[in-house]
Image (cartoon, rainbow, N blue to C red):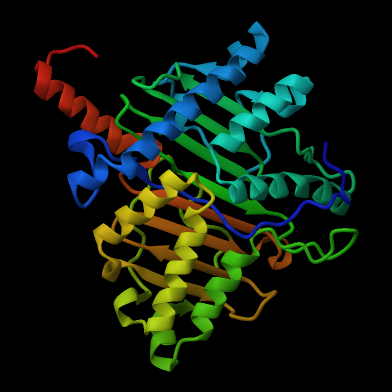
Amino acid sequence: MFTTGSKIQAFTISKLAAILLIAGSFSLMTSSSYGQSAGAQARIDLTEEMVNATNSFLSSLSQFQRNSASYEFNDEERLNWHFIPRDRKGVPFKSMDDAQRKSASELIQTFFSAEGYAKTENVRSLELVLAEIEVNGRFDRDPDLYFITVFGEPGLENDWALRYEGHHLAFNWTFVGGQGVSSSPQFFGSNPAEVRQGPRIGTRVLSTEEDLARSLVMSMDVIQARKAIINEEAPSDIFTAAKKEVGPLEYSGLSYYSMNTNQKAMLMSLIEELASSQPRAIADERLSVIRQSGLAGIKFLWIGSTARGEGHYFRVQGPGFLIEYDNTQNNNNHVHLVWRDYMGDFGRDLIRMHYDAVALEHGPGHRH
């Protein structure tokens, strides 16, 4: 149970998404020896923990709740994500008894790093702060209106997915044929971005991401800033919204190649901060894929004022991924932060490669 004055520690490591592909011909490691060693075993162990935690949670539910929580893997609901207060499919904390809440918490902790889990709890707790600010607002600001939804039958060799979503959290993990796990789209929101009254005054759940990005842009010389800052007026929200599939945005900004050593370190710290809400095995693989794709292809872009408290937007865009951050709503005190993977959101690349491999082994007419 959350209370408005609760002392929930604000962890600073965030989370957002990409792909874990380690086994066999789907490996994205630099060498097969690595893929078959510690990294591969960590992925296998994590997947088993995720399967067990999900099945344990499902078994704790009543038949009615389980029916509400469960969908077929190919149901179009799997792609129906968003980050606004609205009705959702699945089982919310609000409908769970104490034992089910405990099982749900254990499930969610399995899918996050310790820091990432703490951040999700901080985001949920802000619902009560927001309720006090709005006073009789049109939305039900309730930290228990966060939902768990399962698609397919969890199993080590199965195609299945888990979604954890509410107003300002949207996380999606997709498992395909035992070959890997996709962990995007990944979304954190924070409203307020900074608590400015009451017992939790000064709380900034997504402070590290904002501060790292601002430090990076403020460190730039005039020539660099002209490339990085493309407009003085920030957009009203992230450009990709809650689209089911995204591609690269306008490829503007300052490239990693054009940064000095300290700036490169700040940019990588920002990316690592966002990746690290995932369990270690997923975060490490996400960063490995980025490095293998080439750091020189990464660009950093800023729109809006660089002064704290004023509207601003930034993005980090690489060959295969996109990070967007916007803080303009509610008088520049409402953050949306997303990680997207162009090919891998909702496991699209895993699914395609898996079925290509099945067709190669059994022929194109094989039914899977």
